[in-house]
Length: 228
Image (cartoon, rainbow, N blue to C red; front, side, top):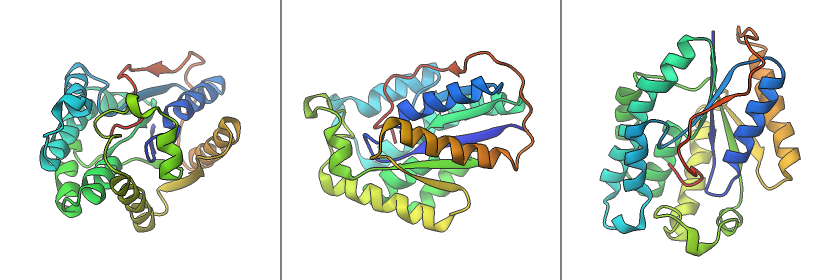
């Protein structure tokens, strides 16, 4: 049986760095790991990503935004994630359905239960085995990237991002067994140590056999730090 691990967190939480460090650590232990990101990871997903994150489309409604994210997710689950899981690969995904609930649900005030239903349809009910939440103060996370380089989502006001962070806390409280909270304000090395500890602990309860010592497969999708 494979393992499906997702990384979540506010903008600037360092997910992209940590997911690569984890893939390398798993590879060194003989496990096949595949990294992918949302939105993106497929040609269709990358095209949707351009629409979602470009400041050119500031008139996009929250409902449209949510549906585009979920559409990209449906494609990557069909084209990448489910086939990899079927082959016994450990899949590491930079954002998944929880991002839509946090950003479009709690951030934009869209109906969370309606979003859950649409996400369930799009993914065929696929759920992560473990979700690592890298927590950072909103201002700290946004300061890690220069404002003139912010994409459309990063440029939302501070209240939006605070609501997103509170939304994540509600999601964690609803399903604490699936989540592991990591302090994203520590050093890169300290964060990696926390991440690896949580993952190895979860692997002890799963049936995963080492299959390769090759480097992790990485599906390019551009910078995903603000992708919901």
